[in-house]
Image (cartoon, rainbow, N blue to C red; front, side, top):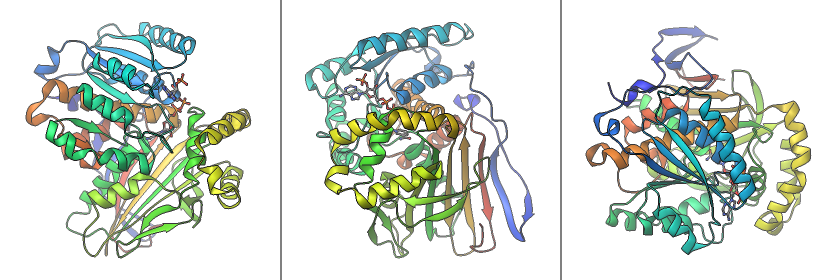
Length: 450
Ligand SMILES: NC(=O)c1ccc[n+]([C@@H]2O[C@H](COP(=O)([O-])OP(=O)(O)OC[C@H]3O[C@@H](n4cnc5c(N)ncnc54)[C@H](OP(=O)(O)O)[C@@H]3O)[C@@H](O)[C@H]2O)c1
C-alpha cells in the first residue's frame, strides 16, 4: 500500500432516477470528517526521509496558516516549517499557536516544528538567501493582482533551485510565470502555479470531469463558485476581488473563440445543492478559464468555457456589481488604493461574516452532446479547505523531491491540470477530506440537468 492509504474512500453508486433524468453517480465522498492528524502508510524512500524544510511565504496570513495546519495533519515525513512574513510579533504569535496545537495531537506522527522568518518578498537578495535554506517554497503572500514583479518569487526559487508552488488567483500573474516554462524545462526545474481550492482543486475537478466523459467531446465547461463573505480568510482576499473587478472576464464561446465580457455581468442562477442551494452567480476573470482552455479543451470544434462567482449575503453581489459598473477602472486597478480600501471595509465585512458564515461551494459542469458530468464540492469554511487543498499540492512537491525519478512531478512550470492522473487523484482525495459534499454525477439524457 502506498500513499493512497491516507485518502478517503470513493464509493461507486448505481444508476438512480431523479426528475425523469437518468443520473449516474460516478463517485461520492461519504465520510466528511473534521480533519485530524493521521498516521500514514508511506513508501520506502519516504520512511527514511530526513526532515524537510518548507518555507511558507505569507505564512502569517490566513491561507498560509491554514496551509501549515493542514500540512502538519497530512505530511508523511517530518517537517521544519518556516512561517514567513513582514510582521514579527504576528509571526511569533502564530508560531506559538501552531506549536501548542501540535502538542495536543498524537505523538506517533511525523514531527513538525515551526520558526518565524522575517522577509519582504520584494527584497530579492534576502528572498533568495532565505529560499536557499529550504527544500520547498509555498507562496501564499497575496494579493497576486497588479503585482509590479509577478515572477519575482518564482525566479528567486529557480535561482535557488528549490521547488516552488503558489496559490495565484490572477490571470496576468499566472501567465507571466508560465512564460518561464521553457527555462524551467531546460534546468529540470519543477514549479506548480495557481494551486489552492479555486483555482487549484477546481482545475483538477474539471480535468477529472472531462476524463469521466470518456470519448464524448466536451462542448462546454461551466465553472461556478460561491463563498459566503470572506470565507474566513484574510483581508487580502477583499483587495484581490476588487482588483479582479477592473478586468473584463476572459471566456471562450461555443466555437472556442476568446471573448472578453464585462466583470460581474451575465447573472445566472445556479443550484449548488448541499446547504447552499440556489444563488445567482456572475462572470469573473479567473486564470483557470484560460489555463484549462490552453491545456485541456483547446481542440476543434472548441469548448465553451467561463467561470462565474457569487458571494453572500446578496447585498455583497450587488455592491460588487456597482463597483464594477460605476468605479473608474483606473481606481479598481490601483493596488495600493484597493489594499487600503480593503482594510477600511474589513470591519464591516467581518461583522457581516459573523452572520453569513464562511461556506464555500463549487460546481463544475462538463457537457457533451448526450451526457454531462457535474462535480459538486461544499465546505463550511473557505479558510480551512483552501489550506487543505494547498497542503495537498505541497505534499506532492515534497514527495517529488524525495522520490524523484519517474514517480516525481514533471519539470516545467505546471498548472494543476498538467499533473499526471495518479498525482491528480491523490490531490483530489486529500483536498476533499473534510468537505461536506464532494461528488460527481453523470446525467445521460441531454442538457436539462438543472
Ligand atoms: N488559489 C486559491 O484557492 C485561493 C483561495 C483563497 C485566497 N487566495 C489568495 O490568497 C492570498 C492570501 O490570502 P490570505 O487570506 O492569506 O491573506 P492575508 O491573511 O491578508 O495574508 C497575506 C499574507 O501575505 C503576507 N505578505 C503580503 N505582502 C508581503 C510582502 N511584501 N512580503 C512578505 N509577506 C507579505 C502577509 O504578511 P505580513 O503582512 O505580515 O508581511 C500575510 O502573511 C490572496 O491574494 C487570495 O486572493 C487563493
